[in-house]
Image (cartoon, rainbow, N blue to C red; front, side, top):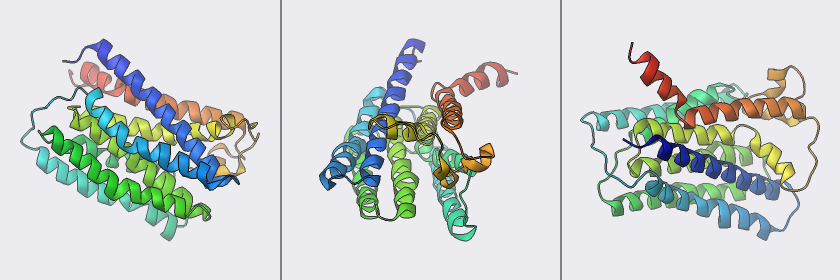
Length: 275
């Protein structure tokens, strides 16, 4: 069993990594929405963020301990079920954005929960070389094309946010969580890592860093947040202010930390499962 102190420092490292990734995406967003030199945008998107897309999953193999876990008899079945649920969850955004012409709102969290089943149940190859190969193939086949797509649709606001936030960032954290599972992480830990990372990414922390890291004052009000995946104008009943957004950010980030540090697992194991 992993010692509590080891779990604590590893989770703290992961939390710092996720905040750092959010800071990088804030700079990518800044480069995409401001009139800056194309080299600046390329440097942040490809030179930093995309590079982290392969470095971090490999690093998480070792952070998880780079150990082989015994494979349960039903894991293949559950992995197939996870892939089916992933496909079902992938249909949520098109239905809402194209058919219903509205954001999915809090169904986003259901979608992320289903997505997280893939790294939770993916089968861990015994060979380290095979694990590396799978991560590199996924990176080359999915993350690189998505990064190219993000850069190509910057002039189209809807397509940019859909490709960057909806596709690239989601798969970015999936790859990290898969790296953790490949390093011997448990199913629950792998799910936790994916959920925590995406929640921090969607917490609006990035929106604050967008202004703060580039020496800009906060806008005071955020009228464009009605187009956020969760309509924050409808949630608050008015155009969100800096304070409103801060409250939302703190709540979602607190939930992400709760999940990352497996507080729900502790409650389940110690207080519910025992009954």
